Amino acid sequence: MIVLKTDDEIELLRQANLLVGKTLAELAKIVEPGVTTNQLNRVAEEYIRDNGAVPTFKDFPNPYGNPFPAAICTSVNDAVVHGIPNNKPLKDGDIISIDCGTLLDGFCGDSCYTFCVGEVKPEIKKLLDVTKQSLYEGIEQSVIGHRIGDIGSAVQREAETNGYGVVRELVGHGIGKEMHEEPHVPNYGNCGTGEMLKNGMCIAIEPMITQYSRQICMNADKWTILTRDGGMAAHYEHTIAIRKSGPDILSSFEFLEDVLRRKRI
Image (cartoon, rainbow, N blue to C red; front, top):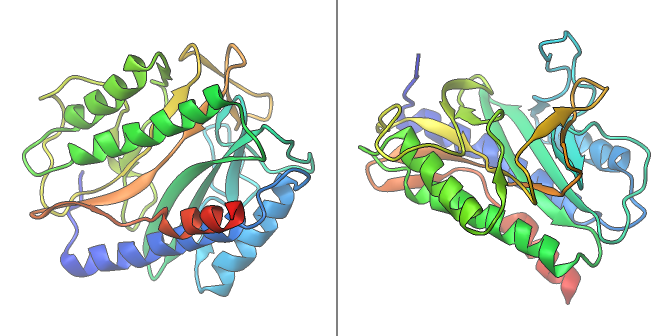
């Protein structure tokens, strides 16, 4: 069942999602060669808890009964999603998708951003740029009266026009008091199909785009999803509310992108 949110509930969702954005900004300060994903995880969990929230990913169970052991997912290079933090240092030229979730005042935040580590090859930077643009193409379709298929079709068109693969097995989702609610929000589909978008519907749109083939496989840890051909993967995610005025982005890349700009100066 899809639960439509009131204006007050949407504002609570906004605060949870802004905290995710601020957490990602803290991580943006230290994403660089030599840093381990375990270090990133420690900073994230401490920041989330210091701000009165709970990291929703930690101890989240998968279908195999294995609880996720960390506060953030850190997916490096050919890891699409659900990468487990470890002690391996990041290297110059890597990319890392950091997915973060919070529970604050009873409502969930969820957002993801793919970072460059040091100097990244232009063809990899293009993958990131197209993936992020595909997210905004999907958001643009998120208006009352459109359907879920309009979102997926827009994401798919942007990615595939540029020669990239669109992962089918993993999708976006509704969000509210629970991190994963109905409806499913695929990154592919046909215009005019699927659930109709209504005022108060809150969803997480999260393109997962691959450099080459869209085929994926699971790592032995039963969490990390990898590209089958070893190509790179990018992942961006915003939580939004469907409103009479149009799509309302509740999460934010503004904080972290400000950090990245200042690091380049």
